[in-house]
Length: 201
Image (cartoon, rainbow, N blue to C red):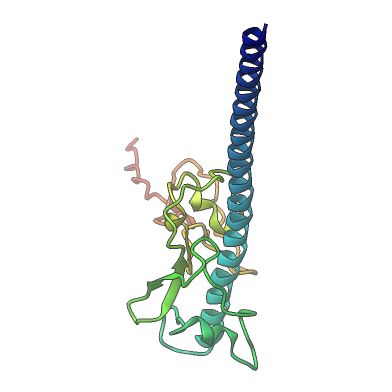
């Protein structure tokens, strides 16, 4: 009778141990899933912050160049030597010098031939969640493999040529028999006609 009770208690302890191990495994799985989900949420927020700050820097570079080269005879873009130059008074082009949201440090700079900063990029080699439907200023980011491939620069590859206001493109005149278009399609040019010799009666 004593042996059977001891055997029953041992079985009961074994079942309790198994149940405890099962609960621990379930808690581990739930914790791992929650950690992965949290990591995704954090990365998406940092990704959105990277886009916002990168586009702001890109716009600041464009405004800086347009302002500095206004009235100059020499063609070409003008770039700041540091991002601090974009924040200087009395006309700051950037609210503050941002850090790379993904790398939590300095940006990698894209240098112009003159040595100025013409763009910035993240040092992170992580894969972006966003692959499509980018803002127009950076629509060339579609399909890029890493955040390091997101280069916020001026001029931007996404920028289309802008036609100045008040300048209309040359209309293409309809072609008429005996005429052809001049080079550039500006106006028709009459084709010379061969004069017929007079008929003798």
